[in-house]
Image (cartoon, rainbow, N blue to C red):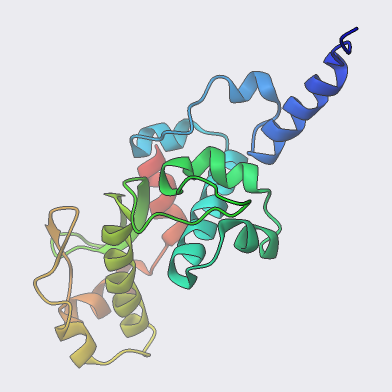
Length: 196
């Protein structure tokens, strides 16, 4: 005789997985896809789901750079591996012997803050791909550290003429100082602006 299914236990597990992914429950999760194609799509997610997705991408980045299993990094960051698999499944190799490694690169959408040459403040831009995101993150790090007085003009010269999302990045020290003096660097506001 076959075992009877425990529908209540299945329901509880489904609800728990949805909550760990940042949704209020399975019904809300069903309205969204883990494949985010634009900032607008990301903006439609509940804030807790955006946070869970960011945590998953952070785990993938750490696993990739450290060349360690995703399971280990997820455990260290107290994030269920299921959350990483759901939000960043395309960035993962198949699991072998209970270990999953990040692919060398991926094409997942990321939003990256940056100072652009033709703009008056920090802006978030859509970046597709882990390598492009790493490069944009490095450029913003130099820009931000310069504004904070921790990076040199020579470091800014190293990013001169580079493009992020098809637009030239700001590398003029006078312009960066003027932007910081006039508007400050309001990263949360820029993030809210791109999400709509």
